Every structure is written in structure tokens, then in C-alpha cells.
Amino acid sequence: MTLHPGHPADTAADIADFANEFVALRRKLHSQPELAYKEEKTSALVATYLQSWGYEVTRNIGGTGVVGTLHNGIGGRSVGIRADMDALPIIEATGLDYASTTAGVMHACGHDGHTAILLAAARHLSETRDFSGTFHAIFQPAEEGGGGARSMIRDGLFERFPVDAVFGLHNWPGVPAGQFGFLTGPAMASVDLAIIRIVGKGGHGAKPHQTVDPVIASASLVLALQTIVSRNLDPLETAVITVGTINGGVAANVIPESVELKITVRTFNERVREQIKGRIIALADLHAQSYGATAQVRYPRGYPVLVNHADETEFARQVALRHFGEGRVEADFRQITASEDFAFMLQERPGSYLFVGNGDSADLHSPRYDFNDAILPDAARYWVALVRDFLSANDTTLTIPSRVEAKQDD
Ligand code: ZN
Picture 1 (cartoon, rainbow, N blue to C red):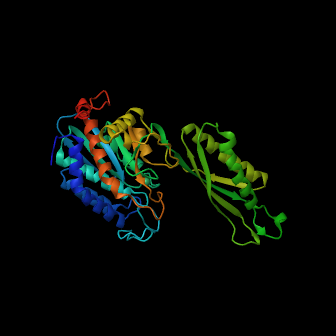
Picture 2 (cartoon, protein in one colour):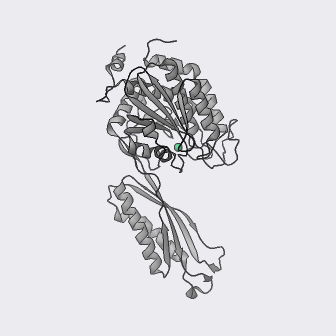
Picture 3 (cartoon, rainbow, N blue to C red):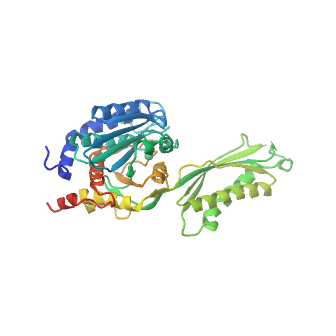
């Protein structure tokens, strides 16, 4: 049933008509999760659907990435919406009847949901075609540590599929189901991994004076690392330094040769990121030295700070306000110390990463987590509304067109 093309009400009606199919699809994806860069079945499924709806489909971008492109009308603007497709190496403990059938692999971050949401929106946009411009549906591999967004960019994503802006979303447990969250500026943290090996001189546990004990040096270092945030950073900055693993030794009566620490570092700006790196390396060296040991530090870079662009974020927020009302937009959505490789896309093009409440579910990356299917229809409606409104805005402003504003009054 079509009331008025472009009216949110008919969007809602149409997506409701086929939402169950996409809930079923989401559960199918959940049952067959695939790890980073191995999203073969998932990407094939995505490509098949997009093709069947008339999209131009390009596969194998940055690995298993897929882009579906739909042109309509004469509009010169273009917008990209990104969903991630990969799962995690987690043993599922949900007991759901559509639980993972692949041992040790699980959709524990809701990327099955993100993929299904974008597919539902893509289908609706292809059926209604009530937009003017170009829509790119971007399905990326390997968000979970593999930098799939960066791989797609290096494979020419934005040269081959130019966009005026790019948007993405993540479901968010702990926020009421279907509530939208927006943040301007640094929204999600950078993540780096420090791997420190403290090398001493092993020996008999009863003769410590003949050894250089790397356990003692490591213990001292763990405590010292916690002074970086409390003593070195500007108190108004935010950062996290977590020593997640300490490994060394095999027996109580043996002093080991070495101990290895793995540390995750989260920050909200590049200056702090560099400052912490410098301090970790210095403390590791000096602590090891003070106990007669040496430190070997590796510091592989992870994802950068995710910085949402102001204009696009305000635009995205306005879309939610106009189509769903003020009550559906979280007033005070806070910065997140988790990381997200959509940050790479936002370094290349303007855009915004937003959040949709997943309700009272288990947390992301928990073996008991599940994506909340109840939020799928509205999240798809949101993408449809954003694509229409973005492509209708004129070239020099992101103001939502008066066509949509007028609808507010009817
Ligand atoms: Zn995720």
C-alpha cells in the first residue's frame, strides 16, 4: 500500500510487510557465522539478493566485500551506507534454535543484524525508487580486528563508488530497543596493542640471587603502567590502559627466562595516543633495566579514533527526529571506549556512525549475546529515510529538504 511516495508512514507499512523475511534472513546468517575475510557464504548471499533487486553488484572488494549500487532519477548526489558481515571466534552459549552451527564461531556483535537491516533497506529502496541520485550499499568484511574497512578503501572503494557521505550503525546493548544515539566528534576510541617481553635470566626458584627475575620486573611494570593515565595525562583527557594477559613460567620452583604482557590501549585523540605509546615504551625499558632485565616492545597499531563529522551527524540526528520523533533519540549518548574500523571510512569521507539500542540483551562479544530482531524494521526504515533525505538535500547544504519538513505538518 502506497500512501504518498516519500512519506515515512508508507515506508513503515512497506517494510512491515516483509520484515519477517529479513528476521528469518538474520537468523539464517546467525546460524552460519563466518570469521573475518572468510565471509564467503554471507557475501554470496548478499550479492544474490542485491542482484535480484536490480542493483549493480561488485564483489571481492578488499577481500569478500560487496557493493550494491542503485541509481535513480537525475540527482547528482550519492550516499554510502555500510554494514559489517563478520563474526567472532566465540563459542556460542545462547541455546537459541538458530544458534551457530559452526563450532567456535559466533555472531556475537550483531553484524548479522547490521547486514539484514541494510538488505531490508536496499530492497525497499529498489522497490519504491522514490529517490533521486546514487545509493551504494557497502557490505564490508573483517570489522573484528581485520580492518576490512581499510582493505576496501585500499581496494579503491571511494574512487570506484564515490560518495558525498558515508554512514554506518551499530546495535547497542543496554540502550532501550530502537532508541537512536548520535555523537559528534570523537565517538569511539582508538585501539592499539602493546606486547612487552621482559627478558631476564631463568634459574632455580630457590636461588633467586643467581637469576634475573622477569616476574618481579613485570609485576612492577603493571602497577607503573597505571600511573600513565593518572599522572601523565591531562586529567580532562580520557584513556584506558588494560594489561589483559601476563604469561611466563611453568612451575613454582622455576624462575622463568621471560614474561610477556599484552596490553590494550584506548584513546580519544591522536596526541594522547602518541603520548601513551611513548610512556609505555619508556616505562617498560626503565623498569626492566632497574631489575637488570631488558624489555622488547612491539606496538602494532589498531584502529584510529572514530571521529564523526559535525554536519553529517547533525543531519543523521535530524533524520531520526523527523521520522521517529524526539522520544526516540537518546538525549545524552556517551562516548564509547570500544573501537570500530568505520573510523577509516570517516578519515576518507564525511559521515557519521550512529547507534541503535539493542535493549536489555547480553553485552556485545558475550557468548550469550543476540541481536534484537525487534529493532530491525525501524533501523531499516531509518536507512531508507536517511538515503531519501540525503539525496534530496541540495549540494551545498545538508539541510533536510522542505518536502520532508512539510510532512511534519500533515
Ligand atoms: Zn561490532
